[in-house]
Picture 1 (tube, one colour):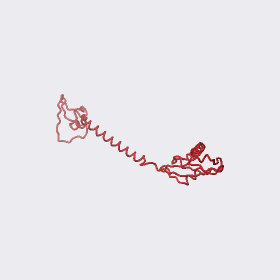
Picture 2: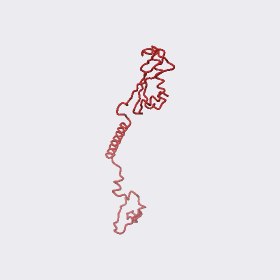
Picture 3: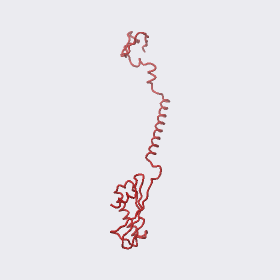
Picture 4: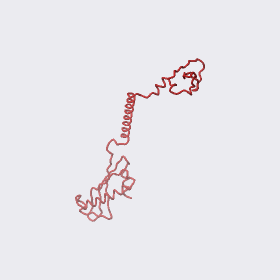
Length: 185
């Protein structure tokens, strides 16, 4: 291995990389810095700076990085949970409605008994009809469900339908006027 001698000249130093450095080459002539191999020119600080980390240090870095990532993911999940999930059950609002059917159906005594087949079929028809009206309206985002409670009226005259409509108030603020406008169209 060739010996390296660096001369300490207190003269002006050139700031270029191509300055002459006196190094023994074994042949008696100095190398130009640009001609010297990079392994010869490295100083101790360069070697320490570019040296790879040993196994214990690498393992510590991996552990610290893993902890940081875990804490970031936990923070992100907490943020998303509080931002997008409700703090409790959705505030539902139930409206009681009464509708008079003047054409088509008439009141029959079997409709007064909620356990009869006639009541079940007729209530399903009106429930589906009202569902269709509300699902096609501007109240659709808040509409949850409808339930037909009872039928009323005089025999062979107008049929009166008692029902409830349930809305999710978190999605849309619904008032009785909004419902009345939709059902009277």
